[in-house]
Length: 218
Ligand SMILES: C[S@@+](CC[C@H](N)C(=O)[O-])C[C@H]1O[C@@H](n2cnc3c(N)ncnc32)[C@H](O)[C@@H]1O
Image (cartoon, rainbow, N blue to C red; front, side, top):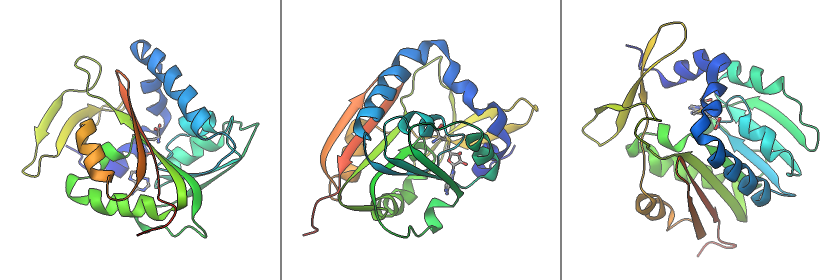
């Protein structure tokens, strides 16, 4: 069984967006799209783990600019083929844990990456994500809620509490994929010492956390 998360997303690039065609998720996707377009309206956005640009495309409809990054060239290749009429959009291949932005950004979007970070690495992820954003800037994270019958079942749990799913790609390969499903309480506790104004939107299939960095650090 393959356990390399980055290779899994590399190999999944061409079929990735099928997950956004699931009929039962369309209402939530429309709600999330409206929320993200509003939150990022007129903003300069730095996006980590952008994948095939599904959210980049939507955010770009109202944002001033989006600089979108992902560790896999194969997903960026898909994203770059889309058209982005109303905002300046640029892409780069970058490991979020090993990337220095030339300057802090006004806002950050991290879609569906929280669930793929080991619990023991979350503090580093939070510091890294917050480090991309200017004082007073905004951070938005979005990811899945676990819904029986819609998500892959959890097939394993490790000693630290991380959960894993067994997924298949269209080439028949099997992958053990890290996928954690945090509670609202856990997310709020994780971020509370770093950010202010936490708003939590709990949809059926997705959660969205919107917050700000303080204007000055105490
Ligand atoms: C579930 S996909 C999310 C893609 C996109 N944000 C979306 O919501 O459709 C997770 C993405 O994280 C990327 N990724 C995984 N580890 C990463 C890292 N260390 N730095 C940057 N991207 C990473 C993968 O290549 C993949 O495209």
